[in-house]
Length: 266
Image 1 (cartoon, one colour):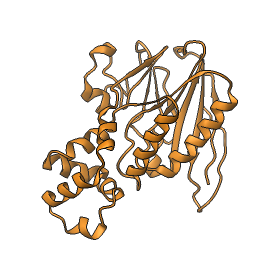
Image 2 (cartoon, rainbow, N blue to C red):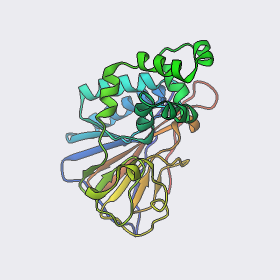
Image 3 (cartoon, rainbow, N blue to C red):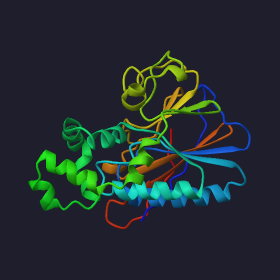
Image 4 (cartoon, rainbow, N blue to C red):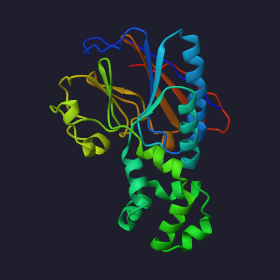
């Protein structure tokens, strides 16, 4: 149904970043409950990693595993299982923050529902008819009862920022001019401006999700890889090794079961 899309990118005039020798990274953008795309991309990554030769490989999930798409519960379960099989590190996104806060605060639950939480709650087995009739108080009780404790602990363990070689990996972005160790959690999970329009080099090239673009957005000082899994049917992974950058993507066919394949261009 889906097939990887690959691109080798060599951009001139961009700040060069690299990974240490012998390391390989697959960074995956916002999944948002699209277990189908996630499964396809996992398969593509496993094949690619096997074919690419020996390396110390790290997979980084850039946050927003949950909400909006149909199977957030399944995505969490699959990510937990994959983490048992290989080195998978997870970054906290703003939707993980809303997920956890909604378990504790009614106002947070109301906010959560407006931004895709409905689909997440339904993915945990709450019946649609029950959901429609439930008060906020009842819905929170149902939500608390439905989410397994291991899922809560898994999401609560997510990291804020990961640094490997010349790259920093975050969910949303960073505050320009602020050292990595001094970045505020709110910015790492929520920022758009001034980060997105900032044109000067950062201390590292920043790999992030959070802001949807139709294609991978490489601005030299940052690389955005949220290609809209839940709305565009495209889940993308950035592959880094040495100074090279490649892209793998699982793409949903527009007419049912369909395989799409093309080379991403600059």
